[in-house]
Length: 101
Image 1 (tube, rainbow, N blue to C red):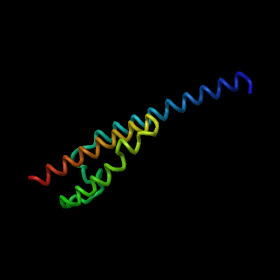
Image 2: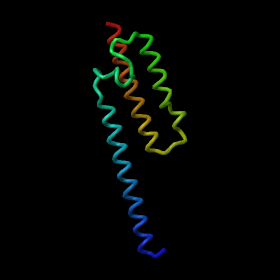
Image 3: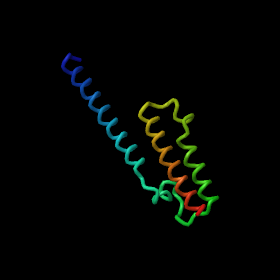
Image 4: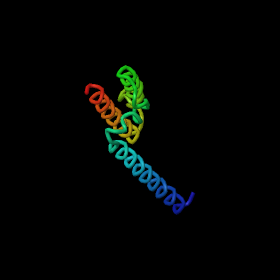
């Protein structure tokens, strides 16, 4: 492999890394901006779900993104999981506030 080919490979690897980082950051910000009115979409339950259904859905969703499960993965995936966990927690809090009123 010539020096020029090696340079092209390195440049495109860096470019690919930068693009994927930008996409993952955008996705994580988009998730954090979900409004409280969409809690049922985040938890994947109907709007009329009972308190027990909400708690069950929350436990199932949050277990998928638990820090122990993603600890061995790449930094970007850990950041995405952290963002998704925040989104799930916000949705759960919004749902519980609605069910208390």
